[in-house]
Length: 79
Image (cartoon, rainbow, N blue to C red; front, side):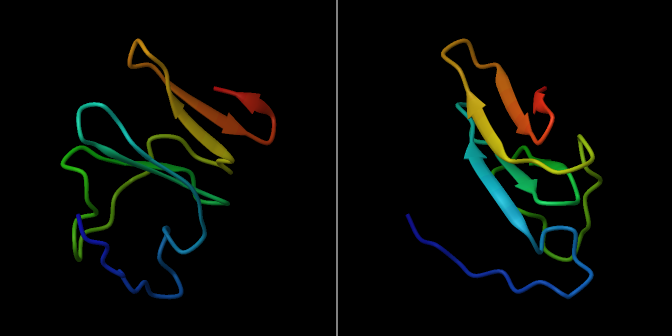
């Protein structure tokens, strides 16, 4: 496995990443400090294509439980 750096523009919604999760199906979940939660089903961001957030607001943590459910931490609690 390799890591690649993805440069982002100053107005990119992914600039302030606060949580990352690869789920059991290979999808990538990206939580941001102020722009919400984004999901990339194929496991990587789409180059040059902006996504719409699945959930808006600040995301503090992400967890997938043994049943495959996604738990999302926010400053106000779990979603």
